[in-house]
Length: 290
Ligand SMILES: NC(=O)c1ccc[n+]([C@@H]2O[C@H](COP(=O)([O-])OP(=O)(O)OC[C@H]3O[C@@H](n4cnc5c(N)ncnc54)[C@H](O)[C@@H]3O)[C@@H](O)[C@H]2O)c1
Image 1 (tube, rainbow, N blue to C red):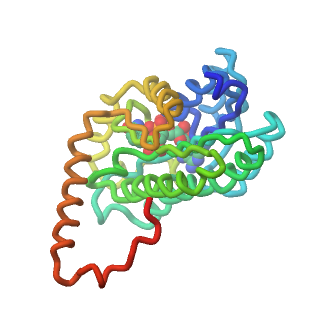
Image 2 (cartoon, rainbow, N blue to C red):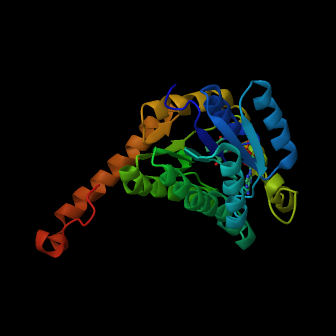
């Protein structure tokens, strides 16, 4: 675990669930942990649990949707540990399950602010700190299998998770010269409190699903709570980082559905290749071949 020993990781949404699991796994491998979350009470419980294991941990409040708060976290992390080597952009909300008509502006903005802008702001503030010391490092973004395939009744969530997959792929190329390895974690269902993310929704604790009488939330809760044990996820991330995996999957049983999607995409390309409208001389050369 020499790669991780004595280095520092910043984890967003680290008070519980997948973020805490990753923080614990990295802390057990000798990393200093900067644990951040919007939920101050739960954050303190998590800090104590890592501290009790002998992990060097600093707990800082952070709403990932606030660029200013990210900057404060950066200053405090540097003041405590000197350098940052890894950012885990984990904080995320599921949003309120429901169809097109149910996702109002407030819902869209909340999910986009946390799941997408939170990741963008985190990278914007922390990546320069990783670049600054020249030792290289890691950027781990937490997306979802929803970033790789359809999840009906969850448009804001799937939009943001697909975006995080795309951002990660681009950043992986962009940051390779700085020896910053970018990975995107794409779990299936994991047993956490994500089904109740309305607890952190600005402007009200009551989940909108209850207000609207939408019964989808009960279905989501039952699927999530029958999901994978969260402790496995952090260990899986550590394993995948050592192997420098771009896509970190935790649920191999999604492979056939992802494969079916790529086969449908490939078949669509085949039809495009056969279209008389798209002959070679009409199609410009590829500018950024990956
Ligand atoms: N649990 C699953 O089935 C599952 C599947 C795929 C992806 N994910 C992703 O994993 C990540 C973690 O989710 P989880 O399942 O551990 O859920 P969780 O609800 O248990 O944990 C999320 C954490 O993020 C925090 N948080 C919420 N809003 C925040 C904000 N604005 N700023 C900072 N922190 C905030 C919460 O307080 C909580 O501690 C999310 O990005 C989620 O989309 C979860």
